[in-house]
Length: 71
Image (cartoon, rainbow, N blue to C red; front, side, top):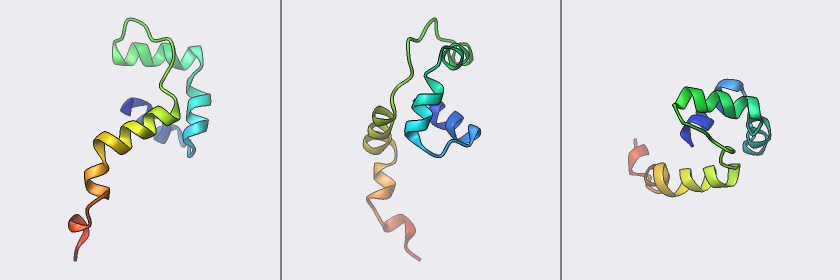
């Protein structure tokens, strides 16, 4: 999931919904399968799935606490 976010930013796509539309094409999926070394991949996760993943698992600790940003 994080790979799609990285590629979205590299490609200059600002909107998560547009990322889903642009990347869920056979050419993109085939290239991502090759880069990540997967055997196959039917489709990429949708923007809602990625947002939930990021909110709940990775960045929630830093955004919920202001102790990291006190001066």
